[in-house]
Amino acid sequence: MRRSVVALVAAGAAVLTGCSAPQPPEVTFYADGDSIRSQPLSYCDALLRDCDTDGEPATLDARPGQPVQISVPAEIAETPWLVIVQSAAPDGTLLPMRQEVFTDGTRHAHTVLPETPEHQPLVVEVQQLGAAYAVDEKDQPIIDEQGAPQLVVRGVWSLQIDPD
Image (tube, rainbow, N blue to C red; front, side, top):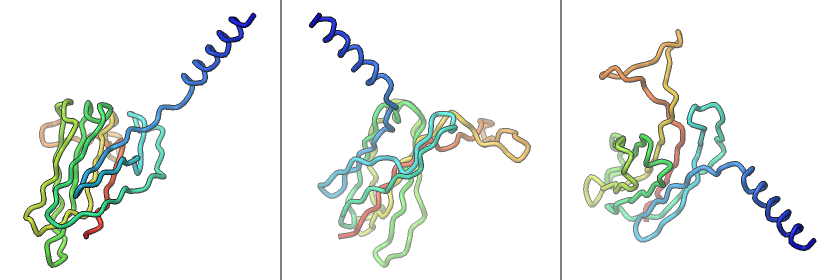
């Protein structure tokens, strides 16, 4: 009798574990000697049918000129993803946003380098693209210069940097 109770408890635990919803991936940001694991600001299934949009940005302190390193899990690295950076000049003037896109499916990390040692990154955002594509008002795919449909953002992770 004791073996069947243990087997039944183990089977019940396996069923409960299998039923839990998968957690969205986390992105790790590193800046000026500190790191933080970030939940997404928003995250959707691959077809953007089910979305959770109640996340908060991560924050780190960093001195001007310090690089920001990003580490993404395979769940993001194996899909198209991009990094968007907003920086400020020493006088506080916002610089044009920079963007880098990774599509080869093997890139798990990226380092954001400031334009100069005096420039301050303020926001570093990671965006994961989904399998859905953008459409116009007639439900026709919106295509880029190469004729490929424009993919829509599936997940967003944001780091807000507090200047030291």
